[in-house]
Image 1: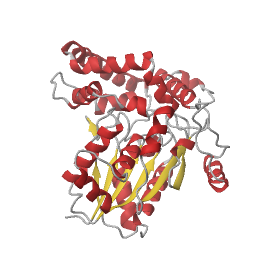
Image 2: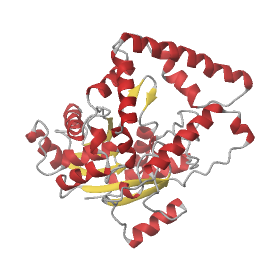
Image 3: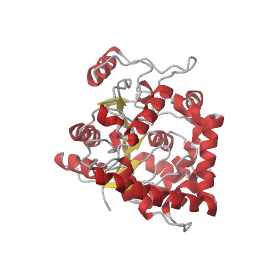
Image 4: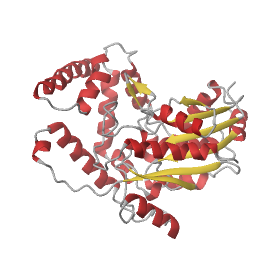
Amino acid sequence: MQRRLVLLVPGFFGFTSVGAVSYFERVEHTLRAALRRRGVDARIVRCRTQPTASIPRRADALRRQVQRAGGLQATELHFVGHSTGGLDVRMLLAPGARLGDATATARIAERTRSATSVATPHHGTPLANHFVSVQGQTLLLLLSGLATSSQGRGTVVAAARALSVVARLDDWFGRPEGPLDRIAEQLLRHVRLDRSDPLWRYLGQIERDQGAVLQLTPEGIELFDAAVADRPGVAYGCIVAGVPRPRERLAGKDLLDPEYVALRALFRLLHALTGRPHPRYPYPKPGTETQRALDRALGFKVTASTNDGVVPTLSQLHGRALHVARADHLDVVGHYTLAGGRTADWLPSGAGFTPEGFDATWDAVAASIARPA
């Protein structure tokens, strides 16, 4: 049995993989290499989750994943949670947590040495309030309908085939590969009508439980913080991300790429919604040294409005700040423009995240895991 286990926990809407699309793109390879440079031998496990389920249900699912991976026999456990995954980890490790099997939960906590959160909304995100609205609930219902009805699945399959054709057409004009091309190659081309297809199972999970939506609002997370304490003896650390406020200056070539223009407009909307702090639930004010580190790393003054397109930067602070990345919410898990064509940039934030920045981010995670207790 492996002495050390490192468990990667995905966030809201998260998955391990759907089709050929991986949630943690190149993270395992990069993290494993960084650990080996420090003489640390560990098995890295990508955990499954329930995409939009409540945090207690997600945390209990995580507990079962740890048990199946042999976590009760491991000497050390190290958790790395992206986005909501960081909250799942905090709940699993909280003293007195009761998640279906109190004995197993306690044994997991005893073996845990570190808990690293990556772009996690420890103090909520205003974006969650949008999903509580009528428009947000309508979107979730639409996704549910696509998964649970034969007509919905048929519509998606037909649309997938059409998008695959459109994605190939732009090759004739010499355009570089974009997100649509990668979606077509890695996901749409493989979608089937069969209910057992991973895409339908994923959407079906969204249909069955959407409890996390309310819990991730600034109002809801205040109750979480009041009830969920850190466990003594566990090293809590965070990776913090943020991007400058988008300022659109589209060049002529950008206007010829409607795919980029549409995704860029979506990011601007997400960034604007996330940048509206709640007037009655403020984020904790960072200390002087932490504020300076944030400002220096991001290259501008970090305020309550600064965010990564999904989570406010100040909401991501919990425990020791391990690294600050000038990156958007998905850049840090490998979905960025300069990733060498291996993945899609779903959130074209213009942050300019690089392979070197990606390596530095996960090197900081490795350093935390390797740090003696």
